[in-house]
Length: 163
Image (cartoon, rainbow, N blue to C red; front, top):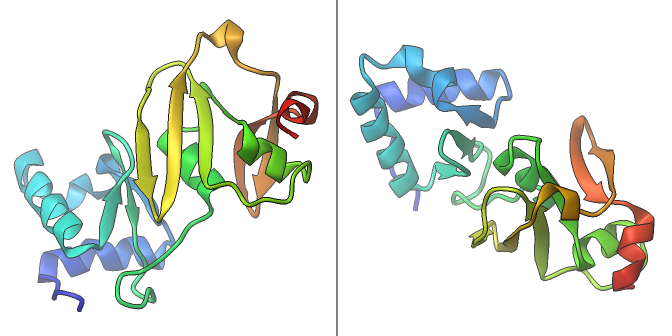
């Protein structure tokens, strides 16, 4: 069951939804609060209510109002790009092979080579494994688009290693 929203929460959520800005940063909503501490309190409440998901230090994902019982899904490749702020990463492994139609099996996890983080995260029932690599050891990359959103993925030749 969805918990109610306060007037202030509803105000900035409505503005984000009207702009269709589901990925937002702290700077996008800062003007609605008198201090960073107040903003932190409201962000924490919204995370507890299941209305937002924290992607990285400053970026969040707003679950749309049209989501039934706060259950929503976003394409994993777009999520990864937003988490990495569109730089210094490469989607590789079976996920890349699946994208290039080299294999038919839908990937259970998405392997992401990057220069900063190394951890495993689960968002929207998608397991994302971050593997830290030096920039010179990243595979050859290609920029592609899903809808209007671009992402970085290993080239088809690099992905053939997984097929």
